[in-house]
Length: 291
Image 1 (cartoon, rainbow, N blue to C red):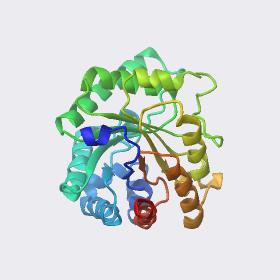
Image 2 (cartoon, one colour):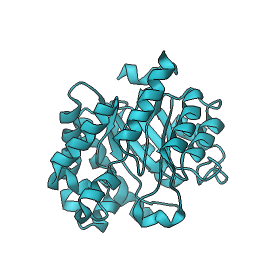
Image 3 (cartoon, helix red, strand yellow):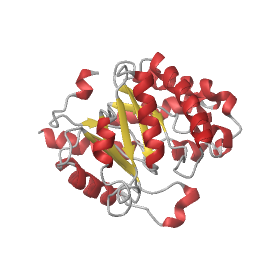
Image 4 (cartoon, rainbow, N blue to C red):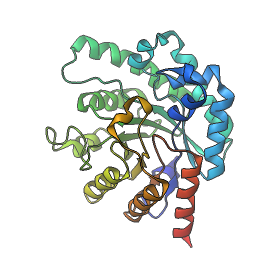
């Protein structure tokens, strides 16, 4: 764990790539909750982890992006929360077997400033349960990924501070606009200091409007913090929002990835519409840099 938190930016970890859209391509019945594959198709989740490991991934994210109150409720699967969460962690651990670190992944719920105090209380109670479950599994990191609501991030980080008490490092990964800024940046210009004060160990950027927006986010942030920075740019978007027209070629993706790596980040991987082949390309970039 100490090795992960070393702020020496000379070390660059290779992350993994997409899970949800890869699993949906072979199992459309998963619908809006690819996490269901942890119990329905655990072998395919394992194989996807293995594909990323074979490509060089050093940190695996669990297939638990939607294991939160909102997403599970929408899929009528709240009763499966523990099973899906623990299953996702266990599958990743079985694949990693001392070859990679494990990051328990939690995606956004969409909680914002217009939501009620009552709703916040309900979400917080469920999040406490989720974090306690994850901490008990002794993962290497917890990542709040694709976060875009300021109020939800505060809820996540405050709850993590209370529950985890530094037992598990917290990695926050934000999605950004075309210009590389978080969606809430203009309304909350001190967002970076606020999140630092709430004890994040890694700060990252993922998804959004393709690799160029992630590059801009790193450029804006790198000289403002000593917290290790991470990047998981996407090559496209899930099919239900493809009309936004974001689809990058591997050549274009690698061009931006090289620029991102050159900025001195701590970890790089890929997000939506990526595959083990894209992680292999990143691995070759990182290995070339070490020569």
